[in-house]
Image 1 (cartoon, rainbow, N blue to C red):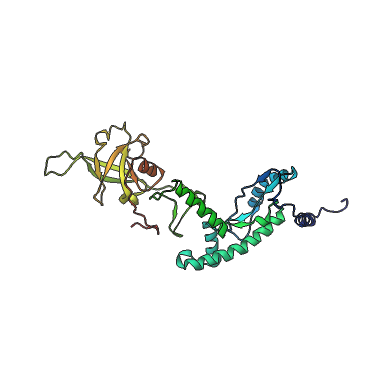
Image 2 (image 1 turned 30 degrees about the horizontal axis):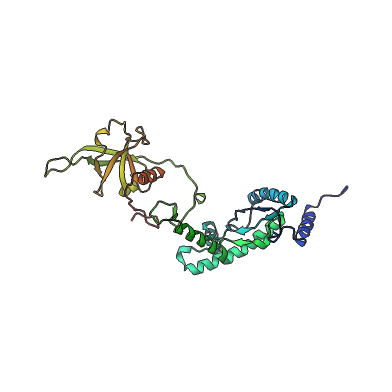
Length: 310
C-alpha cells in the first residue's frame, strides 16, 4: 500500500461482511467434536452508548474464542443484554423523566421494554462493528420468557432441595427506588462525622430487695449513629475490660424508649474506642449483623422502606 494510507474502516467493513456472509460464528448444535462454551456476562442496558471499557473487556474473551474456533472446536458463544435490573430502571427514569414509584407498574415495565429494545439494537451494531465473534442467532434478554422460565425453574428446584428459606435478614436497600441492591450497585464513601455519647440508665442483676427499683452502674456509649438508638438490641464490652467486668450478663435500659437489652462481652470490641462499650443495633454496620446473627439477638426494624424512622 505504498503511497497510500491504510483505510481501516473500509477493511473492517469488508471483513465484517465476509464473516457474516459465510456465517462463520454460528454454533453447530448438530455437529460433532468438542464444544467450547462461553458464559458471556450480558451488559446492562443502562446508557445510550457503550464505552471503551466495554470494548476492552469483551475483546479479551473474543481472542480466546477465535483461537478455539481455529482449532476446530464448536464454539457456543451467545450474546445477551441485561435489561432486568436497577441500572436499566434508573436509565429509563432519567431518559423519560419519570419515577417508577410514581406510576403503575405495567406502564413502567412497558417503558423499560421499549427503551431496552431500542438501546440493545444500538449495542448490537457497535458489537458487530467491533468484530465480536458471537453467534447473534443466540441473542437473549434477561427479561424474556425463556430466561424467566429458567430462573423460576431454578428457584423451584432449590426450594424442593431445601436450599431456600424465608427469613427477615439485613439487605442493601434503596429507599428511593424501593428495591434491593447488589453490592456492585453501591459506592462506599468515607466521611468525617461526630461521635455522640449516650448515657444509659444503670445495669443491674435484678437482685434488689422486693419493692426497690433495680440500680446499678451508670453506662455511657459512644456512637456515630445516635438515630439508631431505638434499634439497640445489646451492649458489648471487651471481656478483659475491667471497667465493665462486673456488669457482663446484666441488662441495661435503653434511654427514651424504656426497654432493656443484655450487656455482653466479645473480644472484637475495641476498649480504646469511645467509652469501650459498643451499642449493637439492627442494623448499623457489618459488626451489628455478625453479632445479631451469631448471638441470636432480637430484630428491631425502625427504618421503613422509604428510609424514614418508623
